[in-house]
Length: 153
Image (cartoon, rainbow, N blue to C red; front, side):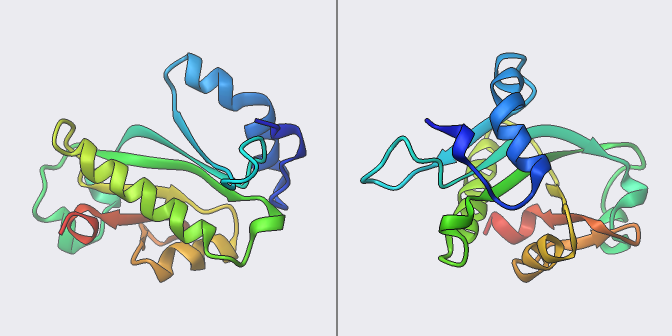
């Protein structure tokens, strides 16, 4: 896989896949999932990461928080999701997000989570996640949650 040529337009995400992804995998900090075109498996079209985390109940929307205990609750974290510029605008980001949600849904048979958290890099990314039902946490427009009830139907 040629990560050196990956360019999604966000230097932090480019640097991550080029320099830090393998370290995170080796240290069990994240799982990295990649997408490549069927006719060029060395081309990195996009990727996302998943890891486990927790969030204070007080940061959750009141409707969800009132059903939960008043201590940190488990969540899945999509730490990064990026699509190479050559593949942007073709639905790959949506496919990667759906795959991430499916993987978390499958993991819920073994690992409890109340939802999926993302930290959007910018307003455009936040809007992308809102389009799929993610909601803002604690008045922060960059931290969003997709409750488990939304992807575990």
